[in-house]
Length: 249
Image 1 (spheres, rainbow, N blue to C red):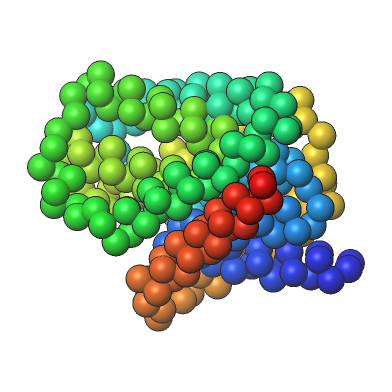
Image 2 (cartoon, helix red, strand yellow; image 1 turned 45 degrees about the vertical axis):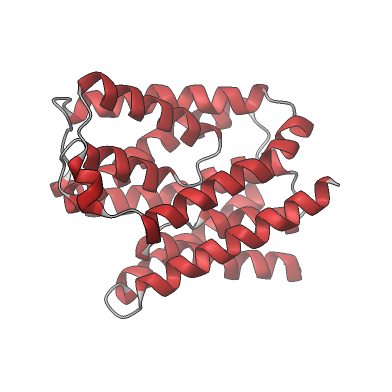
C-alpha cells in the first residue's frame, strides 16, 4: 500500500461518515480516485461500486419510514429508479472516456450547485408548497435516476426536493430517497460489473473504509454541526471544479 492508497483509505473513511451525516461522500472519493491514477470515467464507476454497500446499510436503517409519493406506490418508484439507474450506467459506458473527462467539470459544478442549494438555499416549507402530479413525480424520478446511474453527485438533494414537492414529509422523504439512491446505484453496479473493467483493489479499499466511516458517522450524527459538514462538501466540490476546469485548458 503506497501513500496514495493511504490517502484514499483516509478520504473514503471520511466520505462514509459524510454520507451518514449529511451526504456528498462521492465529492471526496471521486478526486481521491483521480489522485490514485484512474481516469474520470473509471473513477466515477469505482466510486459508485465502492460506496454502494454503505448505501444499502443506510437504506435498511430507515426502511420503516419509506413511502410512495403523489399516488405512486413505493414499488413503482423502485421500478422507475431501477430502470433509470441502468439506463444511466449504460449511457456512461457508451460515452468515450475522453468525452466524459471533458464533461466531468460541468457535472461536478452542477452537482456542487445542487448540493449547495439543497443545503443552504432551499427551504422545505417552500418546496412543500409546490405539488407534482403523478406524471410529474414519475418523470422527475426517472430523470434523476438516469443522472444517478450516469454520474450521481447531488442525487439525494434532487430526490429530496422532488419528494417533498409531492407533499411527502421531510423525514419520510429522506428515508425514501436513501433507499431509492441505493436502488438506482444497484442497477448501475450490475451494469458496471457486466461491462466495465473494475479496479477491484481500489474498490476494496474504498468500500471497507467507507463502511467503517459510515458507522462512525452514525455515532457522531448528534454530535457534529451538520451545516459545517455541508459547507465542507461544497468547498471540496468547488475546489474540484476549479481544478478540473484548469486541467481542461
